[in-house]
Length: 72
Image (tube, rainbow, N blue to C red):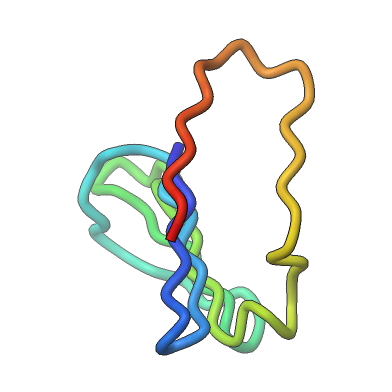
């Protein structure tokens, strides 16, 4: 999973799977779910992200992962 923030457009994209999107569904204003050809959720696109979510802090709790940090 990868989170990418684009400050020039204030957009946050949460990439859940490294697969191409085949279809999209806007579930609320500026929040779009992307699905692959099999209907699996592959990403979440959030417009005006700074007004909808806290971008200052990210907490990962008990996930069995390696954390990679890339500072902007």
